[in-house]
Image (cartoon, rainbow, N blue to C red; front, side, top):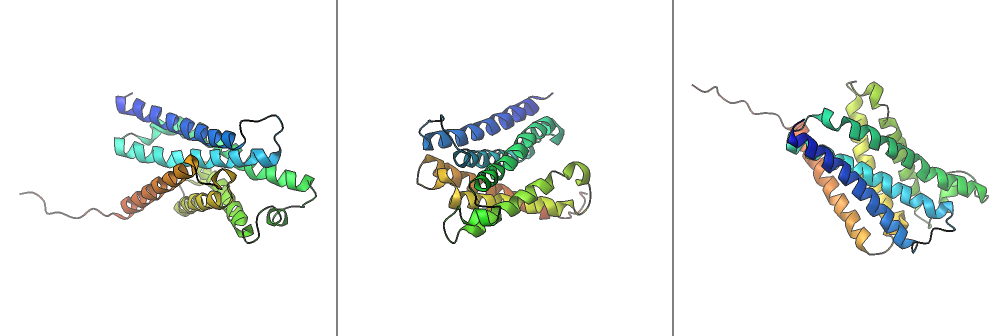
Length: 214
């Protein structure tokens, strides 16, 4: 294995671990590091933060791999295991909220969502639900990733990442006040937009024809 391959693997794993840890730290600080009597309402936010942060690190890892000229197979195991963790987190994030709202006699979504958030923000919860469905659909890439229409699912996943970025800004309890994590969240967003723009540019860039050397 080449040095670049090893370096790319280390950076990818380190980045995912770091962003997940930062999300946990922000959540821990918000709860004053008191974990003795946490309810589902207090637990579910950090799961969403960690899920999106790890997915963000996937985009950064792909960009690093391409810039370093590393074969995509080098990060195959990294994506496999971190994707499993994301799948668990994105299911538990709304799942805990739905469960707790139902236990509290608030019914099921979308009604239970509407009564949980401030008036006028219910549509953002539905934005999160739509994004979740897109992320779940993307898990079928193992079977349909080679189909010619699959690129549309991948592009929808890009839009879902942007939607969840906004979802977090408007509803995230750890993002409801100015602080270091808010600044970091905006940094994540800037990096994501940059990578998406770069991907769009390179996908649509067609090599120019040149005259053969004589």
